[in-house]
Length: 279
Image (cartoon, rainbow, N blue to C red):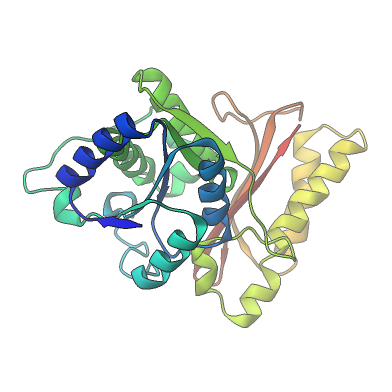
């Protein structure tokens, strides 16, 4: 596995390897790799000839009071995990590489960026869009892989690719979960033992929604109230709990096929998100 730190070298290597091998699969990450990231790498390995994993904690997607400095980092550990999963190139640029002095260009996917997480994190998806666009321009991947846990992010990236005619296929893969249902996330590291014990309640609430829908109940207000009651019993602060469509992330009154049930909540000082798609 090669470790690349500069954009110029990454672009040159991508161009050479694409001509030599064929397809490139990109797995963009902020590091502190977990089983969710590894599942993306393994799928990319099946689909593509060359696998690039990027590790970059992107400052432009964190607000002033958010956890940029605190976000877990362990490049040595990540390198071992990435290599074991079959990564060919680990791209680890610095802030100066990505945002040199005088940098002023950003991308905002209107409408979609202002919903769900975008309400409490207003600059977040602007930062996500620009770093993903830059990675696509640097690596030139054939396919890029993201998890459905970050469903809004995935939908926004797909819309950006469509609107800007980017030559990359964006692939979303199922959320990877712990045995108790908690969606794997680098931020799970923040949880105390007590908080970790109650964190699966988010998935339990989502499963309650699914059971109600499977039983024939499609009134979103009714099923969301049942889910909310499950969460607030353990004194978790809900940021949002919504039923939205996949096209524009607008609230729906009736839960139908391809409705996304999404939740964000604060467990102590840690904000976690989760979702299920009604199929």
